Image (cartoon, rainbow, N blue to C red; front, side, top):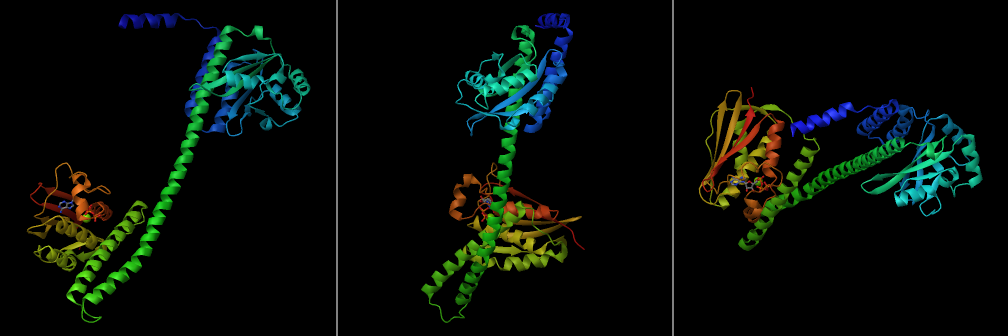
Length: 446
Ligand SMILES: Nc1ncnc2c1ncn2[C@@H]1O[C@H](COP(=O)(O)OP(=O)(O)OP(=O)(O)O)[C@@H](O)[C@H]1O
Ligand SMILES: [Mg+2]
C-alpha cells in the first residue's frame, strides 16, 4: 500500500506543466477558493466570471467575453447574470440594443443554441453570435456586434449540478474553434463544473437564509401570541376563581352540600387552568429572555411558611400532611415571587405524585448558599427519567402515568430556569417507589 503511494507521488512529482497549464491550474484553484469563501450569490457570479479571465491570462489566448447565464424556472427563461469586465464586453454592452440583464431567452426557443445546450446538457460551438441571442432583437444586430468585438467563435458550456442544467457559460473568442486545444477545453469544462457547484451552494445558502428568517419571524409571532393570550386569559380566570371561592365561603348565602361539591370542582379546575396559563406566560418570557428578576434580601423561612399554608388544603384532600420544621431566620438574596412559584411547583408535584404518607420541607445553611429540600413518600422517579425531568414538556414514565394526574411537564423546566436566573440550581434524589427529594439552592442574603 505504502509503496504504491510512493510510486504515485513520484509520478506526480515528475509531471511537468507548461506555463499555460500551470496558470490554468492555479486559476482553477482560485475559483475553488471563491466557491468556498463566497456565499453571496451576486458577488460570486461576478467574481467567478472575471477570475476565469484574469487569472488565466486568457485574453492572450483570445478570450474576449465570458457570460454567465442561468435558468429562471419561474419565468421559463435563460437569463444573463454576469459578464466579464473586458474591453470587448464593454463594446458589446455599448452596442447592444437590449440592456444586458434584459436579454431573456425563452426555454421554448428551440433554434437558440444556449437553450439547446441547457436542454441537451451538451457543449456547442458556433461562429455566429446571433445563435445564442436569437430571438432577442434580429440576427443582423448581433452579427454587427460580433464584428465590432472581433469574435470568431462562441462556445457554450452547460452548467450542471446534480445532473440538472442550471444554465450555461458562453465563452466568446477571437480565434477559430479548431484553434482551441484539447487541454484548454478540459480546463473550461472544469471551470464550468466549479461554477455549477458555486451556483448551487450560493442558492442553497440563500434559501437557507430566507427559511431561517421566516422561522425567526414565526417563532417571534408564536411568542407574542402565547404571551398575549396568556395575559388576556389570566384576568377573567382570576375573576372566575375569585367569585367561586367567595360563594364557597358562604358570602352569597347558604350553599347546599351538592352545590358545594360542584362549585368546588369548578374552582379546582379554574385554579388548574390559571396555573397552566401562568406557566405558559412564564415560558414565553423565559424563551424571549424577557423575564426580569428583582433580587432582594428576604427571610426564606417566612416565605416557605406562608406559601405552604395555601397548599395544605390541596394536601388534605389526599389525606397528606405537609410538614415544615421552621428554623430561625434564613436570609436569601432572590426574587421572592419567583421563589414562591418554585415552592408551589415542587410541593404541588409532591402532593400530586404521593398517595400515602406526606411531604416535608427542610432548609440547610451551606456557607454562601441555602439549600431547600422538598421530600415526599410518593411513587419516586425512574432512574432513566431523572436526567430528563427538567426539560420542557417532559412528564417522565413515557408521559403515560402523568397523563392521568394532569400536568403539562412545564413546572420543573420553569423552576430550573427561574433558579438559574437567580444564581441558584435544582436537582433531585429519588429511588423508584421510595419517594423523592427535590433540592434547590439560593444565594445567601444579608
Ligand atoms: N415529587 C415527584 N414525584 C414523582 N415524580 C415527580 C415528582 N415531581 C415531578 N415528577 C415527575 O416529573 C415530571 C415533570 O414534572 P413537572 O412539574 O415539570 O410537570 P408536571 O407536574 O407533569 O406538569 P405541570 O407542572 O406543568 O403541571 C412529572 O410529570 C413527574 O413524572
Ligand atoms: Mg408540576
